Image (tube, rainbow, N blue to C red; front, top):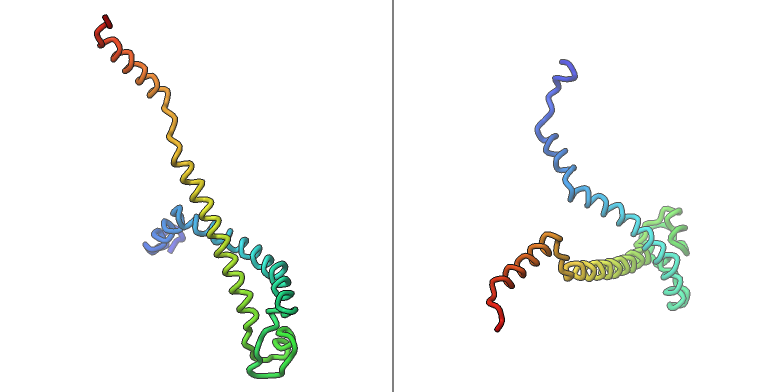
Amino acid sequence: MSPSKLHVPGWVAEFKAFIMRGNVIDLAVGIIIGVAFTAIVNSLVKDILTPFIGLLTGGIDFTNIFWTLKGPVEPTLTEAQKAGAVTVNLGVFLNALIQFVIVSFAIFWLVKIISKLHRKAEAAPPAPSSTDVLLTEIRDLLARDRQPPAV
């Protein structure tokens, strides 16, 4: 069979149409921006907030809050994982929870600001076109000419 006579299943065209729709492209862009935003939030939590929270809690490093279920008991999570221990990583979960709250808070304010800007843009009435202005002037002149003269 020649390459030009290959049978292409019907779902291939449907899939191509689905992928090329605008909302799928928008979703992909949103995911990419979300990944970049997550990196910023991860740094904010790890490099800025966690040290302050650790300071407030007496120097506790959340990443080293864990329970060893099986294997050697080590002082840090990194050492326990290197030794092959099975651990429950409560501190890592707490960091993820803090990151979730920060992301949720940031998205809340972002949506709130965008909604406010969108409402302001909708509230402004559109300026009349030059045709509308001209038709309004003609209407007013015709209405003035139809009125009886004042005595």
